Amino acid sequence: MTPETPAPEASAPAAPPPPVPPSYPFRSGGAGRGLPAVETTETSTTRATARHTDEGDQAVAAATDVPQTRAGRHAAARRTRRRSQRPLVIGGIVAVVAIAGLAWALIARSGGSDLPPGVAAMGDTLTRGTAKAGVKVLDIYEDFQCPECGQFETLHGPSVRVLAESGDLLVNYHLRSGLDKDHQGDNSARAAEAAVCAASVGQFGEFHDQLVANQPPSVGAGWTDEQLSQFAKDAGITGAQHQTWQKCVDDGKFADYVASVEAGAVKAGITADPAILRDGQPFTIAGLDAASFAKAVTGK
Image 1: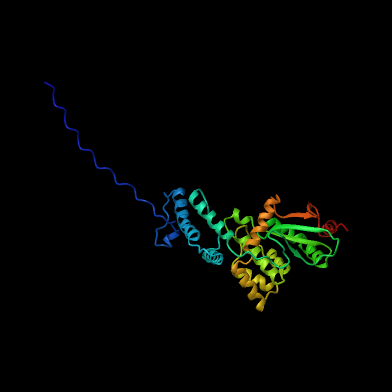
Image 2 (image 1 turned 45 degrees about the vertical axis):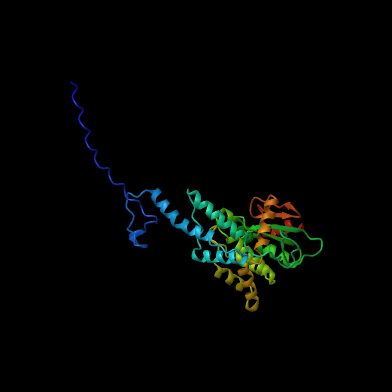
């Protein structure tokens, strides 16, 4: 007779799952949100996930809470910027990158479609000074956040200014904003728009020089609204003229124009800043000091 098979023993209860880490970053000493100090066993992945979750929430709000009017989108961008002047931190979380890119695209499309005085069509350049007949034409492609552009302006900007204002050189500026896409912000476009607004009140050259003299310490850092306003005052834009400039900036009056200049540079195949053309041909500035630059660029 076959012995009966003994009944299986009852399995032990499953161990409880490990606690889920919080969705926000730990702060030193438990400061902020009442959370404890970070434990030594916490992994870098946990910290990265927590950080991106926190900033991702802010990016979602910035990307989705955008009014449908152009002026409304511009105002929303300024409110978001005032909450945090630092560029969006991106990492390995694809969703956060996509949302940030969407926010940038909305900002880039916002604003008015006016043309600055003396500019006939979208994509055309701003000219400094009044040139004499038959002089050489210098085209300068630059982004106000570009460090190499700052170096060019430090070394050769004074010569360009003198030659432009004396009429011995026709100087055209292409104000680029491509660094905004690379750094998920709108600082280059904001600076360019502010410069075009300065042009609309007759102070482009002076405001341009203030911007290049006060370049941010790193690409993507940008300027606050208050700094741009002070640059305008330092450039001689005061009183009623400053009010006109400020309204122009707040309304994003030349946002479409600035976007068209960047699109024109891309279409022209300009891949680096600064790019300098003389009479439409690439002009090499390497090895030129201020005196030799002036002679080379004017052909005199």
